[in-house]
Image (cartoon, rainbow, N blue to C red; front, side):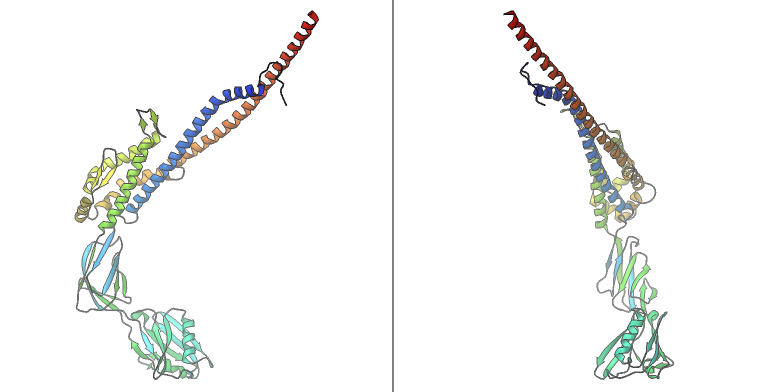
Length: 440
């Protein structure tokens, strides 16, 4: 509705707008200050969660992923074996001799024409503990047919059948899937027309097929002790060591050295130091106060963050002797520095020193893990504070809504008051004109 200003000459809409703005400004500024402070603190909580999560991850690598027990293996040239190690391998030097390799049993049938009908009946192939029964029927009994029937029945277990077309004719070749004596083959036939006896291999009874590769176990000696294996890959000869035999060299001894992988250990520990320093630096910057500019940080005076910073520094100080022995020095600001040379020397003298500091259910590593869990777990310190700040943010939204309603009401009241005044002024001016006319 248009408001007449002919009486007083006052721009009522503009005046009302200015009055409402003047009343709104200090309240809105107060709400905005609180909202911005909450947003800043929310961002700080996110930064804290990120930096402490990184610290937790780096600590887990030292505690649970064998970061303090990384191992490396060195095998003498042309040793006839290779080796891989994990963190459970014991540090040491071993003398190893590969006397023989494990071989897979192989049988070859007499030569036949490709289209020759071998016979009908049942073939029973035993490969170690695996027993495979194959029915051979009329019309599907060439060597090619029998090869396919065996592979279908075996389904990749026990035996693999193949064909070789040699000068003298076609041969059926049976190869044990498993090497060593555990995979040794035995083939017998029964029923039908008796023609399948050409594929029998039952030493002492019938050996129509020829043994072209004998089933043989691997034999290896370690520090003079003999171990026999049906496989050329030994995972339990030495705990934590996988030994892969590649060539038999009887009578020749070669060395295997298992040592601490200092490079990997240094990298893992340095990763922890970097994450730790980031945590110390962030907690310090978030609670700092600039006395010269009288400027506070996002969480200046916050007891929770100061408590976390204090816990980190106290735990390190309580283990300063162990830290120093491993090349970890604590600066005056609480950050850590790693001396690689000191670490290498310490691990050479005591390979378990780093593990004792970080692993186990007690000590520095366990204490730090417990603190980080309380900070980062669901409904932990950071989650609780974040939830509280998010709840506060919602109150600011409501305060803005309430302020809008109050200002709308105030604008309506001011408009009504100034409109009434305008109407009164207009009436007085009209009365004054009338009286002036009558008096004249």
